[in-house]
Length: 91
Image (cartoon, rainbow, N blue to C red; front, top):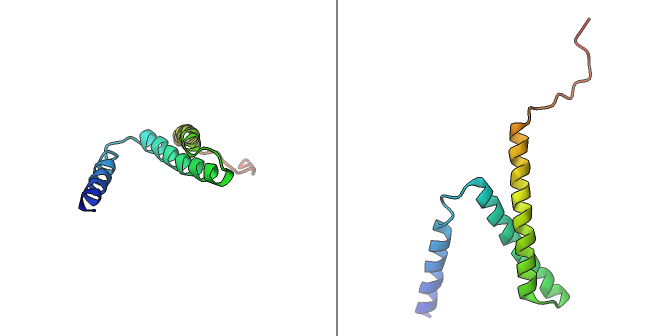
């Protein structure tokens, strides 16, 4: 029991420390992959399909979604704000 607890806590510490120097793109891609993996396993469990295939497919789709979202956010920061005003200021 003590060995299992030691291995799990060491793995958790190393896993969390590895994310400290990541760029926003890397963080969003990894977050998307993690969420996709969880969703893929959940869908695989509910449908009776293979859990590993669900995890792999979910991770791929989630990573792609995280990367696309990151690119969208970068485009939003670069684009100038659009004016919603339709009124003319000329008298």
